[in-house]
Every structure is written in structure tokens, then in C-alpha cells.
Image 1 (spheres, rainbow, N blue to C red):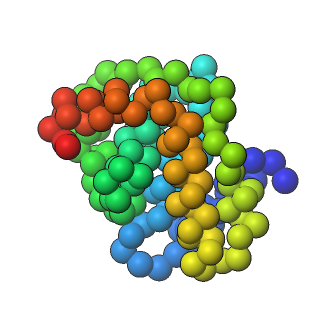
Image 2 (image 1 turned 30 degrees about the vertical axis):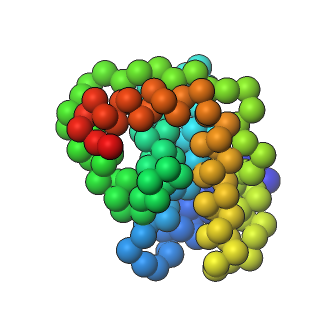
Length: 137
């Protein structure tokens, strides 16, 4: 199974996930950051890193992250280019899919997000500064 196929299956799981937390947003952000390359638009990676920061550092729900993304999208048209690190974290969408559905898979999603965020350690301060510059934090 390819990474994209595993991601699609994890998305199917999270889109049918009940609750107000909207865990799907975290999956989208982790995958976008983990698979970013030279062709990734700056807004995509910036928003992914903002989402991971808000989850991992501030314990925001996916719904809260989504609201921040909407506000940011209205405030700016230029986004910084964040350099993707060589290592993007050891956990992948395939690992999430391998975990049993329910609490264990949800915990694996959070571990995936934490692993990707940790891999982008050189971007932590610039992401926090980006949020501050737009009135968050």
C-alpha cells in the first residue's frame, strides 16, 4: 500500500469519526507536513505546521485548528517557505491504519502528529512567530 492509499484510508476513518474534536484536521496537517517537497505551496506547509503547533503545543482540537486556518486565510496572501527536514518522523499514515480503530488509532494519530512536529523542530520558533504576527498566541 502506498503512503497516499494509507492516508486515504485514514481519512475515511477520521471523516466518519464522531465527536466535535474533528480529528481529521490533525491527519491532514500531519500528512501535508510529512510529504511536503520542493513543489509544495508555502500556504499548505505553513498551515500544516500551524495546525501541528496548535495541537502539540496548545492542545487545540481539530475544529479549533480549522477556525485558526480560516482566520489566517483572510489575513494574509503571502506565507513563509518552511524548509522540510530530511527526517519527517518515524510514524506514518500506514502505522495509524495498523492500529485498531477507536482509542488506540486515535492515540496513534496524536503520536503521528507529535512525531512530525518534532521532526520540524527548526521551524517551531518561526511558526510561533507567524501566529503571533497574526494575533494568535
